[in-house]
Amino acid sequence: MDIVTVARHAGVSTATVSRVLNSSDKVKESTAARVRASIHALQYIPNTSARNLRSGRTNVYGLVVSDIRNPFFPDLIEHFESLATNHAIDVTFANTGYSEDRLLAGISRLLERNVDGIAVLTSEVSQAAIDRLRESQVRVVFLNQPQLTGEFRNIAIDYVQGFSEAVEHLRMLGHTRIGFIAGPPNLSSAVRRREAFLTAVRSRKLPFNADWIFEGDHKTTGGQFAGELIFSMKDRPTAIVCSNDLTAVGLLQTAHRLGRNIPGDLSLVGFDDLYLSEVVQPPLTTLHLSRQDIATRAFYALQAGAEHAGSFTTVIQPRLVVRGSTASVPSASNHRRSPRVRK
Image: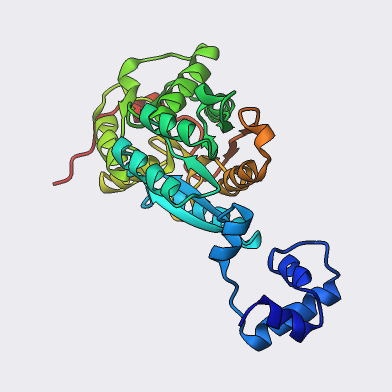
């Protein structure tokens, strides 16, 4: 079974069959439908390897993410793969687990497969990985790596504006004592979120206390541990902003275990707007970062021609979603009291 047999069955030229197989818009829909019917009737399976050799393309994109266990990334992968499927492109994934060695190994594996482009949508990008991609000259897009703007395509996240909205929301509720649970200091995205939060606080001349800044791990465990510290403080903040939603969920778990009330004892804001932020109790006020938007811009950045390399920079704006975890500031006697002790 070959393309000649399909063309004879459909009553068209082999060139027309080829155009239909490549989703060309130069074939009338009625003709394309007849070709597709012949392909189905003959159970013809195109030889994609041979077609790729002729075209010089593999029709495969690589997608690199940080942590497949974080609900943020499966959402992103789903949207990216859906777009790729609609364009007859396959996707190969690499999960770094926040490891520089795994990042480099994943990129090397994708390059060995001769992918047409790689979307590196990770928090961490090592110099070794950048050098490897630079040498390959493959089409690449990064997520929020401003230091690479001018050389690679880049999707920027406006953390400053996002955290400004979160802090202003809390200030309007009467909060002036606002703390922050940061992410791991070795992750560039966590560092940028922390700096954006501090910028928002300082620009409003709100009180700042270094004891109100806690280090987390972008997992629920970090939020749980920080929650223990926060609720044990005699002079604690009245509101906490978290570097991501998983951290906020961990703090919520600690609050429930200690018999504390969110937002009665402490207002809480997350970042990402994961699905679980809607189903926890209370539902989480958070900064929405669209995975669909990131996936869409990353995909079309790879689709863009080589002439756009280094000049393709697009900015995504997080937006505040207000739910039940924030409220007016509690009384001074409430937020300064000693933690409850369960017998």
